[in-house]
Length: 225
Image 1 (spheres, rainbow, N blue to C red):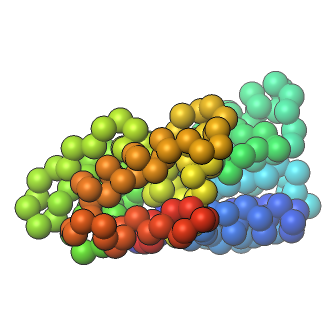
Image 2: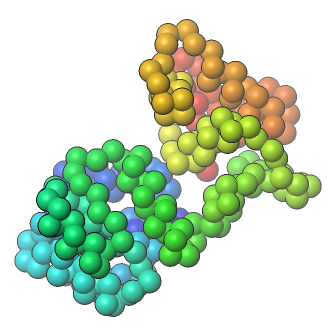
């Protein structure tokens, strides 16, 4: 089941971009240009992403109403307003505050934390192929055939979780390296190749199989969900 987001943003360029990015990462997004009707919709979602500067009622007013209507649904304020005063006011009712511009990886990480804290269905297991299951809540990997945990090294685990945060996306080796090792990629470096090869040995049913981790030669890697 996809994690469900209520997204309220009047800027169509930003809204379209954020919606597309979240949907590519496995979220279901209902996007509203104003807060009108949001109180009736909020209980159907696991999290609200809310802009502050909206036409009509501003995000502060809408956010307080949404929190009253659905106290258990976390609210993440997403705003270009960066003053401490705005942040303090927003965090009186909201659960997090992210300022524009922002990176979508950070936004997704914050969304996942808020859903996890609120007890949303983020803990449902993710199936990879016909035999692997991942519990993202406790970040454990299982072989469904035996029920046993598959033990990964720290880097193997980070790479797999990075794939799961970017489902169905082709990820260049340079992007994977810089995200996991947090340093610039050097041309010709085989580190990612080696780690993904060893990760495959633990996850794939057959040697040299690409059932779970697909290689697109000369482009990158992809995990399909």
